[in-house]
Image 1 (cartoon, one colour):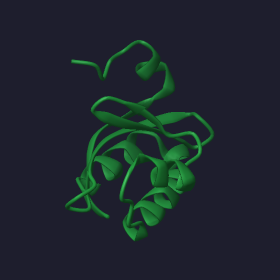
Image 2 (tube, helix red, strand yellow):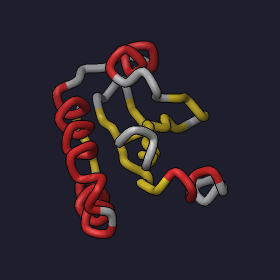
Image 3 (cartoon, one colour):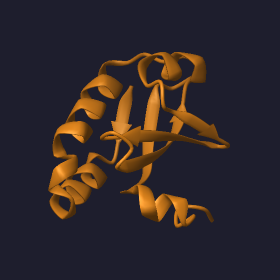
Image 4 (spheres, rainbow, N blue to C red):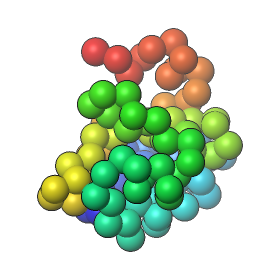
Length: 95
């Protein structure tokens, strides 16, 4: 997958250093993936959830959430937002 907005990962890691290793691992797996559908995403990341039209990844032992939109046909993953679990529970990412 082509991961768009690695900058979001860098910014979040600066503010939350505990997430560095987990986000780096997530990025390596996502970058090497060739997912054709959500079922294949779920095989790579068991805790991923589909919340139309986004995929929500639990990263770092459920300490943070990465919200992404995936264009399976084009092989592109757009990072929409990364936040702590507490921010996500409050619904901060929903429009």
